[in-house]
Image (cartoon, rainbow, N blue to C red; front, side, top):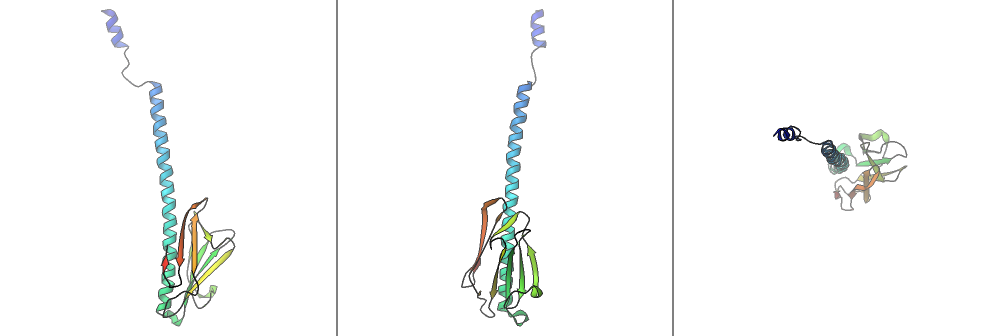
Length: 163
């Protein structure tokens, strides 16, 4: 009878060290995957937000041209510098001039222009009354370091702006 009491006394009622380490490792892996997915989701949302902002600026220029605000045409200028963050500007007039800028906005630090290419720029100007663009325009933005995650904003010859 004495041996039965000793066996009951020494029976394990908790987790072994190996079980604890395995549980912590599984928790760490699941947490890492979740964290990476949250970061990727945030970056994709930033890209979509920048694309929507560009579309809004393009539509703003088109609307201002349609209504002939200021008695002039309106356009958007896109600059992709070799170094630094790309930006775009809403301007008044038939061609871009830094003196006629009404609004300037920059891309998020995690987003880059793919079109226009680095070191170049693009401009689109909308006609008064019709709101038609002076040219067909495609602007492509992507996540820095992940060019496969991208968005293309298009202005077609009929003046439709989409992304």
